[in-house]
Length: 438
Image (cartoon, rainbow, N blue to C red; front, side, top):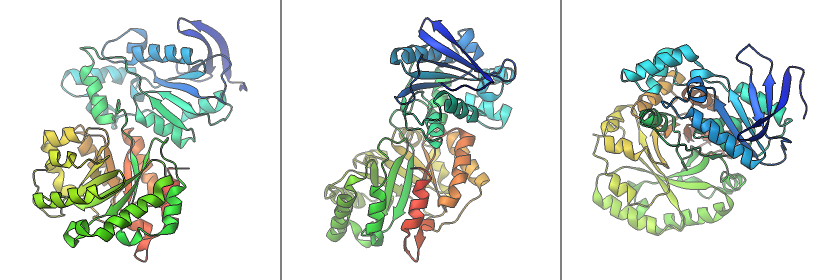
């Protein structure tokens, strides 16, 4: 393995197996550290743990977090796997340092959760930064983009690796709760999307009926494989029950023909977009329509822009048999988040809250406004969040900044900015999707 002058290593037998310890020269007490299995082979699958430094848990065995047991279990699994890396990420207290970490624990005793405590002390939920991790992997793997099996409950770490070009899948690292850390773990689940199992963020493209027969679009979508990716690919199609779409047999056949074209697209979900209605007859028509479709579908509902907020019938929505459920909200509809049953429903895997005030106009909001809106939803304990409104390839760096601030993968949908002359623009769609599926 190639090494630089500022890196030293040594064999280190441990109770978990034999490892090699690598230490980069740096500020005393903050030197980057990694443990690898002997004869690490970057051409094979690499089991990886990015373990954030935790003096209280790793050294003193604190029961107020799950860090120490996770470190131990990760080393056991890496040793058993035989080809892996543990990076000891020297960013104590989510990069606030030990002093503020203890302050955060005291705030938590006073009623704050770990998210709120970090906001108070550092101005953001999680101040960790991962560029050093990527640099260390480049050295240890000799710039190979090895297939990664990430031991983690944190989907943001998958996102970091994918941005760096690594194919990655995540394996949860469950070590159990104690009476001292139950609330801490619940906060990580609800506000950081940790332990989220099969839930993945999505990248959405929304089209209209007139775009369904676009062969170039079909060929482009067929060129992507999101099945083994940490983001799903959604193709949204607008449906207008008020215009008779649900009773239009030709529309059903157009849908089924579209799925035959997209049959080779791995991991693609077709999402039917429609207005939420409190009328039972609308759902009887919808159920008849859905039974005629010859593919697995997802559903996205939105309320009318200035409508009075109805009580959303979650049982009825669940009965429709959709793979994924997306509920679109604008700024005037956040009262829905005061309904605990609504909130609990959208904490589930494959359920998303979409924040969008543009209603298909392509109107853009500032990053600060979007950040504020996302924060208001997360404070309710929801982290399966999607954003829309004016997104195209040029706007996506803003999404990256939002994800880096919240340390949370976000879903995104694009519509009007991917169109030209009233029709979907395949070149714009390609640039947009290539930002995620490289």
